[in-house]
Structures are given as structure tokens and as C-alpha cells.
Length: 272
Image (cartoon, rainbow, N blue to C red):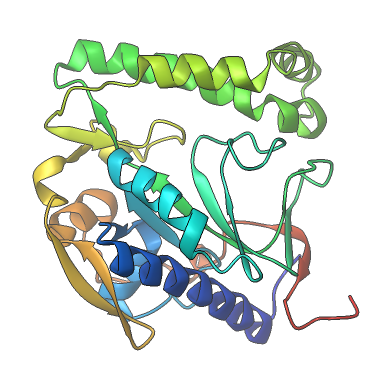
């Protein structure tokens, strides 16, 4: 589904509402987070959403996310929002969380059969420690590559067109979700390391060795859509790692959203 400019902006404003709820809870409970990925780039280059971007990202250290998870039990406006991770939604199979807007829908293409809450969302990533030694880091990434494939298998067994891969996903989907998360939580690297990374999503090649912890320990604030949000203090170095000269716009052919949806319903679309 191709969004009109008007509907893309409506989507961004719902996501801004979700970002603001995360920020409200974190400020109230002294929890650190940072704008992340395209949302961080948008704050620096556009002081808001990248004009063609259709998602929003926040990242936490693991201990800060757990504080946020607990704070949501008492402070989240549950009439409007739902904190989704593998513990709160029995059908959810990703290793990072989302904050969802109730009374809305954003159904990804190929995931129409998935039963989890599918409201408009923002991604809440966790920056895990990764081993400093390259050989151990490669082994670590290999383990989590397998875990990601197992978690994705519920989608892959339906959406995959290659028959061999489809069969493999069908086999992997038989592994209980609880077992997968028990294993992944047991092997997460606990030692505080020089680098952190996202274990549950593929890495950009430029960041394949992780993000230096020193760049994200101390928070600063950046303007985003007229409101200040927390951001990593070393955001310039991190953006340079991820995007090169991040102030230069990409070619027009690359200025497109990257989360195709088969259905979108906004909170004010009462009859849809």
C-alpha cells in the first residue's frame, strides 16, 4: 500500500504521540533512552521525521528497558497504548519491543496471518553488550542469526516463496517461543563491553562490529517535531558510522518508506 503524503504525515503524527508517551514515562521515572536510527537522523538533519520515513525508533540499554517495562505497569496510558514484547503478547515473536497505539492498525505485508496486536507502532530496541574480541563476536552473531530465523519462522512459513526455505521455516516454527527466548536470554553477554549492538535484527554493514558504548552512555537532548527528546551524546559519530555524510540527502529513488503495509487504520478512523 502506497501512502499519500497526507496519510504518511498522519502516520508520523501517531508515531510522534507514541514517542511522546515513552518520553513522558522515562522522564517521570529517570530512565535513559535515545532516539535511534532514522529517528535520530531525522532529529539532526530535519528536526523531525525524515519526510519519507514511516517508522520511529528508540533504543535502551537492557537495564533501562527493564525499568521502562516496570514503569509501564503503573504509568502507561493503557486506554491509548500497549507495550508489546514477548512477555505481554503471547503471539508476538520478535526480540525487541514495540509501543502500539490502540484502536489503530498497521499490518505488514506478508504478516496478515499473525495474531499479535497490530496497531500503529514505534520500535523499542535494546542495545546488548557484545564480546570485544572479534572471533567471539562472530560466534555470538551466528547464534543470534539462528535465533532470529527461528523467531521469524511463523512469518516465513507463509510468506516465503522458495519451497525449500518455506519447509525449513515450517520445521523451525515448531520450536516453542518460550524455549527460544529462554535460550537467548541465557546466552546474552552479561559483561559490560566496549561495544553494544542489536542482537535481534540484522546489522548495517557499517555497524557490524557494534556501536562504541562511549558514544551512548551520556544523554543529550535533540529537537524532534518541536519537542525535545533524549539522544546519545555521541550521535554524530554514530550517524557517521551508519550513514557516512549523514547531512546529504539520498538520491530521490531511495527516498521511500521501507515498511509496506496491506492495511492501515488510524485511531480516528472509527468506522474502518
